[in-house]
Image (cartoon, rainbow, N blue to C red; front, side, top):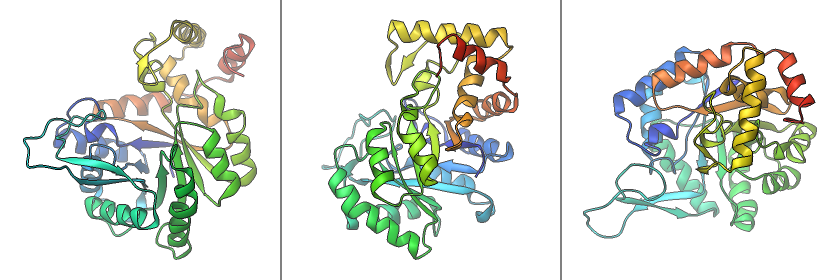
Length: 309
């Protein structure tokens, strides 16, 4: 598994449309840049992300990359005959399908089967229970045991949970045998809440952490901090803190997004940073950022300034 992974939500038309050719070029560019972890989900574009990712990877040797998808939302036909509007959950796709929460054993197995059909594959490597925030009981009593059984049978290689909160992830690590967790937005230059309990627990239990959302939805994506924080307008204090971090980065000839990509991998529990990209140009930009070393002196100054622990 590569230290940086490709997050396929953007090629599911996250926020805006992406053409099929552009989506394929993004996946091709990621593979050519050495990325070997590809992450998707039925939720992303009502299945569009899975279809596009599977088609783009079809010509690649199956044992040359690690593929992750998720369970917890079934994609079912919308009621009525249309005409249909656009999806209301952030993806620019027709609302002719809809999501249904389902963490039952049957729901999880059905979801995975349908994902394989969309991907055009016989198997995936990692299956993540996706956003079970309001479904703990069913996720831990039905979804996890079903996936653990598939792992024991060799159908999947690893089982985990993906969320943007730390408390329930820590509970999964303590109370089940998950192999990995995907932590979105909670171990970044601006939010280190994952370090309080979850990351030390993962290191102790040998659970690999996939760090996602490291730009906190946009605030850390450019050297001049702007835009959103966790998909909402950035609060003033956080914007000011991001600018202070950028100023320190500048003194070390490092850009803010370069530091944001490098920061999570400093923790021994973090196996990979998953970065969303919608075009080959974005993939190339990210690859260039991750190729440049970040000096230890930068982290020392950020710590001395009280900007990171």
